[in-house]
Image (tube, rainbow, N blue to C red; front, side, top):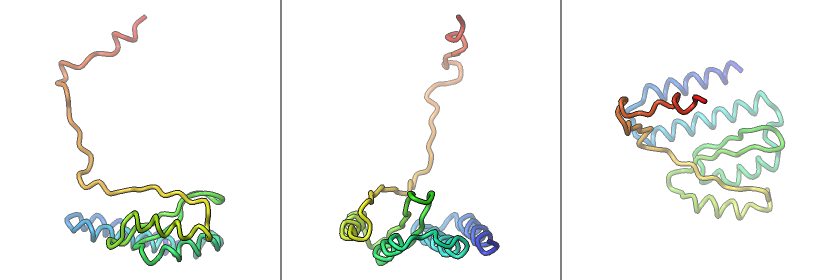
Length: 137
């Protein structure tokens, strides 16, 4: 457990200290942290990776930079971070080929937002409507 805590702390320090590094380097660091987490999780929670899932992740490993499982037993998600040389279509093809290992799989695409959260004030404070007048009976 101490190794897991130390890994999380070090991962957070790396991410915060490298705020101005290239996005690909950040993905590499997140992938390494994800792999470290999963390796440690399997050490402290025996049986957390069923054999068919282990085979499935091994099948995907050549195109992945990072892999882990999340969720509860009997369900959940495999999280994979693709190597930058491969695409979502490559992953989809590999998953289709692996249907003999695990049949019930769906893919969900997640991307990194490079712009961050942008907010915009559409009205000045004086132009805003006071909703309390609508709540009176």
